[in-house]
Length: 278
Ligand code: SAM
Picture 1 (tube, protein in one colour):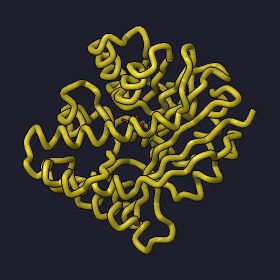
Picture 2 (picture 1 turned 90 degrees about the vertical axis):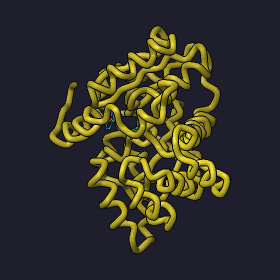
Picture 3 (picture 1 turned 30 degrees about the vertical axis):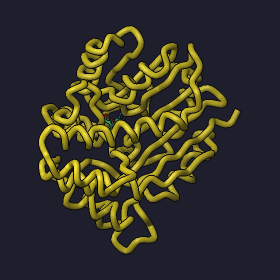
Picture 4 (picture 1 turned 180 degrees about the vertical axis):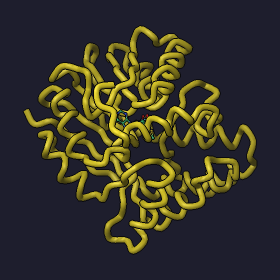
């Protein structure tokens, strides 16, 4: 990997260590998500999840897939032949779903974790998508791609790991084509909430993140020439998802603070879509 700071090494070590983890246990279909879910009928969701077992886990997984599908709508309709960068691709969940949704899309995923890149390649082979998605170990802050390589950039719950967002926006702006669309989905610290800092601190400690306040997503984008087009609040539906994880009682162990963090809106869940100025 081109740049590997002590911080990136810590992020990589975290994801290298997550193997037979909660996310993996949720995904017998091989599409492993490392992101929140969305739930719109909390009472029905809690009833089903409380039954526990595989059925409960399947509901949680379906809520996570619902987040991916909602986010994809903000990518616009990628045309065949277009190139998409999955910036911080995890074990490839979003890339695999995108490859199945858009047959002609050329997809490249990068992650700082060598284990994740290998796991994503294996998942692509398992779903017969190996020729259509590529995964490598690389930093999205020093991408090994020529300028203007991508028409779309997808960054789902990865920018929380970037201490200085200007570096991400600027590198994504270099690697993207003029007019490109960038979709970011992120945990955001609510700067107006008395407990925003405390919940962000708990999450940062558990996940090796530096959760940003919204102002940073609105201002740092200018460093890369990105213009904000859409801002969508998903805090309510994700608070219901975390309530379900708490009710399941067999999660990752972070539910005890993530569930109240989103329920109180000390943490916000946002989708931002930006266009690269032409
Ligand atoms: N986007 C995936 C998803 O939604 O399932 C994974 C999200 S996971 C919470 C965060 C991901 O960001 C991990 O794959 C991690 O390796 C990646 N990441 C963090 N910092 C990165 C960096 N500087 N360059 C590339 N990937 C990074």
